[in-house]
Image (cartoon, rainbow, N blue to C red; front, side, top):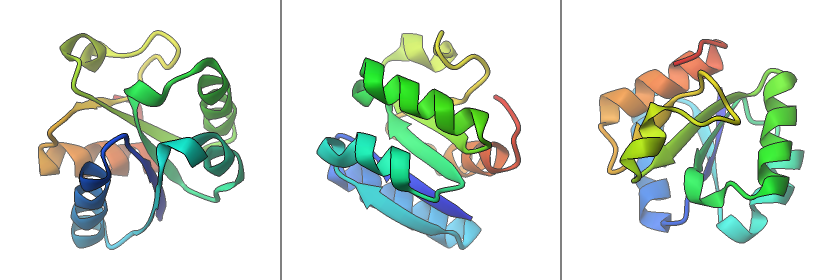
Length: 117
């Protein structure tokens, strides 16, 4: 499995990379926010883990297209209201930041298997 990680905080992305690599043995790719749209469009990721702060209209459209073609999605957020789910992505997991390692792994694994939150 290959996971694309896009977060506004580089240290959070690095922590996600380490947790996922250690727990799932998957390959990861960290992308800086300015390259989010291009990477979402061109990456061969099985799962995209992205911070909700980056959900502009163009990014939402790209993520919806990727989701329709089988790419799993997981969102991360510091906003408690968003953890209940996102209107544009019903059923997709939104995990709390800072991460609970087990919940991060569970959400990415479920997304890779096409399961919803």
